[in-house]
Length: 136
Image (cartoon, rainbow, N blue to C red; front, side, top):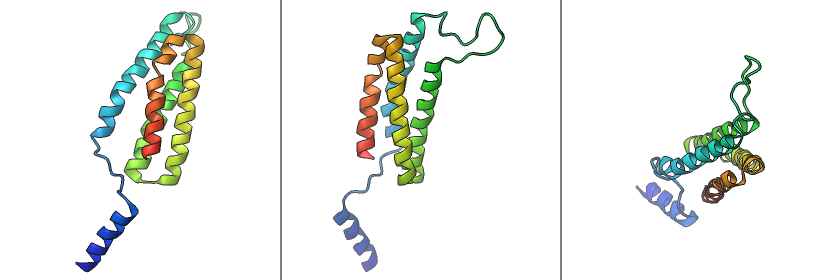
């Protein structure tokens, strides 16, 4: 009994332990994911013949640079949540957050070169990533 009270005091002394509700993460990021999808679609719609899944001249599948960047940042964003909150691996989590943030910035820069209006739709994702990184 006394040992349990000592652990509670130790936790209070060090500060609050960050343990968010698991339902909070998807409800926060889903609107941002929809904005990202809309921004990528808007960028692809600017010149549909340049950004295609397949080349009309060959049977080989061509995935554009922007789509690859979107998929990389999407995968890193999902890994960030799993590594930090699921596995609680802080060192690896910092590496994943850094890579995710670089991939997100790179995707925004590429989107800006294609269609600047679509790039502005991605700014809330950058702000949310910065806030989440500070909270985690």
